[in-house]
Amino acid sequence: MLKIVRGVPREGEVAQERDEVLFYLDEVLAEVRADNRRQNRKALALLAAAVLAAVAAGLLKPDLLPGQVGWLWWTGAFFYAMGAVMLVGALHPLVSGLAGRTIERRRSYAGRLHTWNPPVQREDPDQARGGRSRGAFSEEALADLWARLGVQDTATGADELVLLIRRLGAVAQAKDRYIRRGMLLFLVAAACCLFSVAVGQAILGG
Image 1 (cartoon, one colour):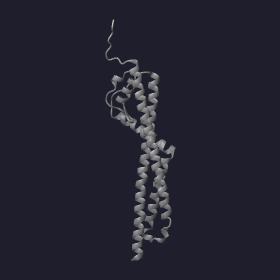
Image 2: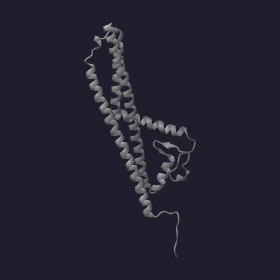
Image 3: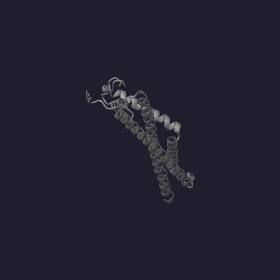
Image 4: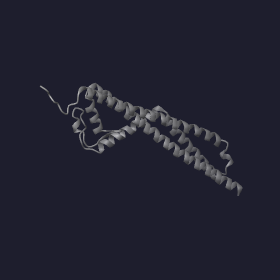
């Protein structure tokens, strides 16, 4: 007697699907790690440029400027120091890690505030509705992921990968925020110093 079973995937197909999901998670993890390395290189390059700019600016002493604009030069120096602190924070693993955890907690709180549905249970992925978000992964995507994996051990390993991706993604976002703030502070510092020099030269020339 031939039994025709429709809609039930074969064991080989399920194993292949698990491998595809894990391969996808590995690719996402590699991409997130590459993003972190890219942010580190960017922060390091900006910090090196800032040090060179500080050495060049050190040739101009604020004592040579008129008293009317000396305060503006020191204001630029303060903003410069704050920008350097931001870049150091982007490079330091402890500071960026703490900022990443803060971003991850905010994501979790935002996901809870934007939905009233109960949390999705892994045993019943069909209940995943409403589009709650866990970082870069929605509840629907996670429920579908667990349903595809099937095996508890494999699903647990994939869940650990998802948590690692979320954590590293939050760290990369924190690094990017620190770098953007540092660049903004450097621009303000450069504007203050250049403006103080220009006004000082005008006062001395007049």
